[in-house]
Image (cartoon, rainbow, N blue to C red):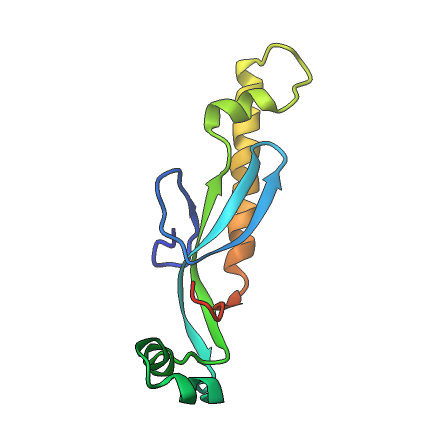
Length: 141
């Protein structure tokens, strides 16, 4: 989650999302989902014009609901916060990745953890350097 200073953090708890930015396969720690957890309106186009079908359906309840809930043609949102979530649990990651030795030494574990932290830091830093946008689907979130 974003800590207010534009920092992206990792988490393994439940996270309400607005979208999925992508999935990244990091060499040491495996696949991570990058989730859009907060966004803000960047641009909204004018509402869609009423169709002749909507005009004809205004007499029934469903037609009235459609007419009253017209949506813009385009809703562009700027991403404010991303969350990086590992797609494997910590225990599985360790044993699924190939090792040069059948027995992991403590030094190797420490090196792997340091490399994993470096990879996540590089990924987070790359997200901080750019603004990301997405379009809301016409049928809702």
